[in-house]
Length: 287
Image (tube, rainbow, N blue to C red; front, side, top):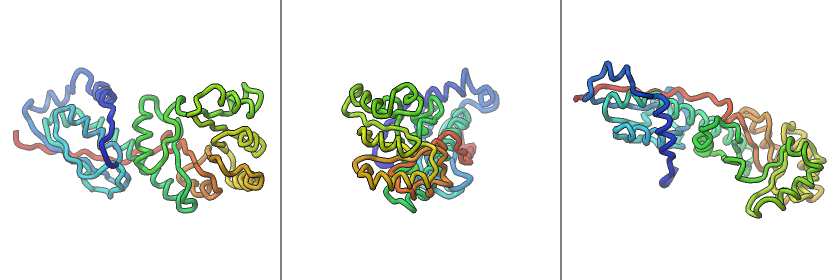
């Protein structure tokens, strides 16, 4: 991605503290204090790179110099060197696992996101492919960044982003219309209001009540298409966004995108993604 970017350095330090603890006893026992080494980071399979900026900061904290060969967000082949690191051998070994974990997890998310975006936009060029809040506690910032690097939309970063009225909210409120009214009165005009619906009647009610976004939740593509056709005929299609969510994966993203929705959101981008196979190869250099 172009331009400078904020990196949460305290979070990177936290990751290192978690793994190193009071010291890397293996490296300290085996490797002389002054020994220097160099390392190359690369994928063992093709994918979209994510996490290099974080890993650069990580090795910098350990006293190493870093040269990035590729950039976050780029698609690369297996074996391409992504980054070269030079510095104390003990430092490289101490940071190795945390660095690999970050890049492999974030790149796995970026890669599956890019695949889903490609499939969805192939049938609906205007559609957005979004993540959800189904992220691991403490890792949301990094997982959402990986989604963005894969070409996806981050959706809500947290509960303070926008109003999203879900089924459990509606169990405690008299109606969809009343929920939208309370939301409009209770939050700033700067916040959009989204309503999760399970069928045409709720979708019509949400749109008529003035929802900015209507989310079709756990509905089959054919049902979503029928709802959108009816909403179009009723004059309720324009002026708001329609989102599909629930049960969507990279494999069926195109089917949902083809319904004509504006957004498809996939919890699978973060909650069940496979990490990419990443290797950090370390070699000794002169002391």
